[in-house]
Image (cartoon, rainbow, N blue to C red; front, side, top):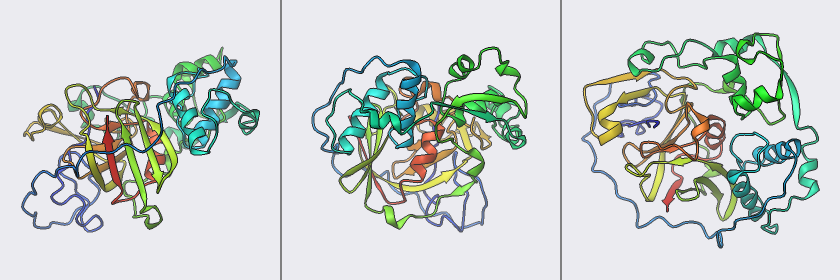
Length: 353
């Protein structure tokens, strides 16, 4: 299972640019001492969370496209903010759900048919990527135990293959398939790799800190569908994005209710505390894990007004929609980076079954 951040909201977002110390596994960026207020009572959700009026659940029969066409369709949906999961040329469950969501948002018939005009928007399924020197800045030593991870300078990618896979929203095995004869485990700067022609996730554009408020997105709403495993973003009544997620687990489910976003931190530090992760109680046995794409919460933490719960990235995108998390909402780093750009502090977050 993948853990999630457990922030203490006493001072986490009250003064986001005067103090950037988030206690109990949040972004440790800069700090000025302030008097900590008395802890507030645990907030309760405002009534029950209400799912958006999306009509009946639709399951579609998908055409049997060849791999290259399937990749084009996955790229089309991904580029338009309707995440099909990792790009692998397979017309799977997430693809079908993303296709229906895209069609619903654009007033199209909710079938599995795909117009040629959609496919034509991705004229080339693949492109060549030449590994630049700066890619090495994001690759470094890794460790599996929190006690060892806490000693690292950053939780970077373990290899250039991992860096490229996340950059182009793909599984490592799919990239190996696209590059027969290439020793993908031994890539180096200057090598050329065939990759899906998707808009890349650029980790070099991320910086530690809090995302500024976006007043233009004040009317947006976030919905967490724990049954279908999707995060939906609405602008007023218009669906503008949908991304695959993992919403908690059987023992620690994502809390049903209506919450709100308190703050958004990029490249957070994670406090690994087994007491909080398993029981929701702080302990004095913990490890502070440095920022990076292989941090347990990935490259993003969106804190809610529900203690210990938020939306975050992951160090293992292969598990999205399948493996469990500790009560939080987990998504792939490339999707987390886009969610960050589409929401703002104060947006309501409705979690429903």
